[in-house]
Length: 184
Image (cartoon, rainbow, N blue to C red; front, side, top):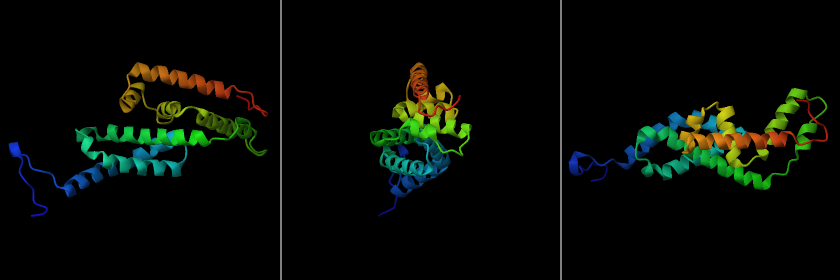
């Protein structure tokens, strides 16, 4: 008999594949908007964020049976999104060729504020993927250190130390002289 439920030892019933899929889909659907924001904060562009979240959903489905407590789905899924984004950043860093001076030069009609923002965004993209993740989680998503630690499965002090180092590296990129220095 297909689709029937079998009783297991202890009075528990076996969950059907359709029920597993429905449970996963319900939880994933509830998390999509937040996941897109998370991926966009890390990657910095919408299309790549959509692709990353799609890949995360696929990976989460493949690992669905490894999630012991469904109440932890949000943190578990966010960790998968962060890891997919980190992998994409690592791949992109191997192909990166833009010079900070090119970004700082901008076009003649750009305002100083737009130039400064572009310079900061480009400097962030020069960081290591792990640094970008920390900067994005802390400053773009405004997460507290304890929340970042939980999401990345790290001690709070480690997050604090790594974030401080990432900010120092970001400052060093921003302090690099460019051909057309942008006022601060």
